[in-house]
Amino acid sequence: MFRPHPLQCRREGLHSMSVESVNQSANAFSLRKGGGAIHVPRIIQRTLFALLALLFVAAVFAGAGSADGGNCGDGVEWDLTGDTLTLSYTGSGSGRMTDYTDADGNRAPWYSLRSNIKTIVTGDGVTSIGNYAFDHCSSLASITIPGGMTSIGEGAFYYCSSITSITIPDGVTSISIKHI
Image (cartoon, rainbow, N blue to C red):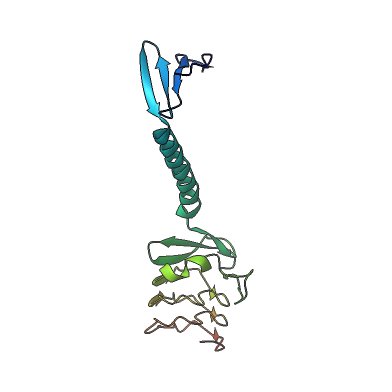
């Protein structure tokens, strides 16, 4: 059995731990904490390390994707909860949604989540739907447009193949018919 010099690991407020022995044939080492020894096989060490690394990466990505929402215009915010995208007026600004394009680099902020969107609810105070706002939302079936809406931009519902009907309020005075 191979015996290295004891390796002391000290942390403030914790007991010291030392490597008691290293068994090269078993690919393991033993830790001694206080009066008892803990034997940890190398395969378990590696497995635990891999699991901790995966949990860390999952936590980072889950944190990045869990808050699906943000600004999408002058006084307009969006929120995706489940399969419903909600556009809300913040109370300040014109209520006009940002115009987007069908080219990479200027897509709507929910574009990467578009296949999850089945319903769009647009709140009072939102006055326009921007160009290409919902293009390629292929699962989109239901849209609620408030009476205060005045314009629907070019290609707003381009390649939204699951829409069965849209009720457009009387207040809408401008609809771009390109790519409908």
